[in-house]
Length: 217
Image 1 (spheres, one colour):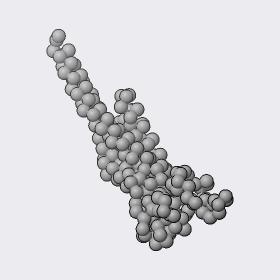
Image 2: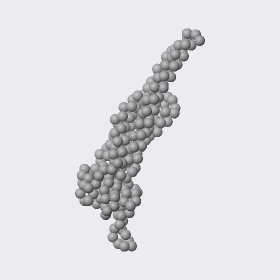
Image 3: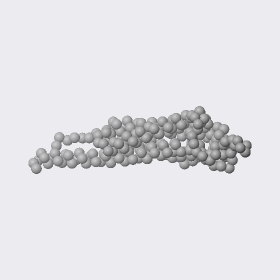
Image 4: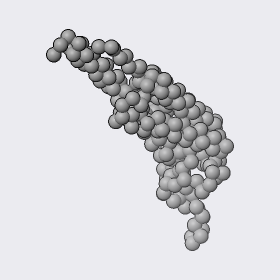
């Protein structure tokens, strides 16, 4: 092997070493992005944002779903609690305007986080997809998605004065006042996913894709 071949081999080795290091950063960003997106999406879908009780039965709410709801007993008369989970019959059936906005805003944010996370995972299997500029754009999308989810979480307490929530919280709840109710794990899970995305994933996206430096030898 002559001197030129040796320099070319050395340059190739240095380039591959840089690619490997950048790949590790990208994989870590993709994994954390997926975990944070999954946390937000699972928390958003599960109806355990607000926990209370009604007629001696545990009741829980999400933004567009609830568990345990009262129905009229046509056989024996009166009202009974059906201990099942389900979504509201229509968008307008959601108890308050604030919760409807929360559903749209949080759902949009979760969709953006999931889109970026899946794209980042696919990029781990294909080279030269995530460049520095693409990584920054992805980070910007994550930042917007995280802010949307955070805004949805901030809007959620504005709906605690609805009649359904008051019935569940001993008629003592109001905006930003839980009464006898408490926040559930799904609310914290959604907020945590948004926080990790805004504070960590957005920053990591700046290093996930880097410009490759090619050397003449």
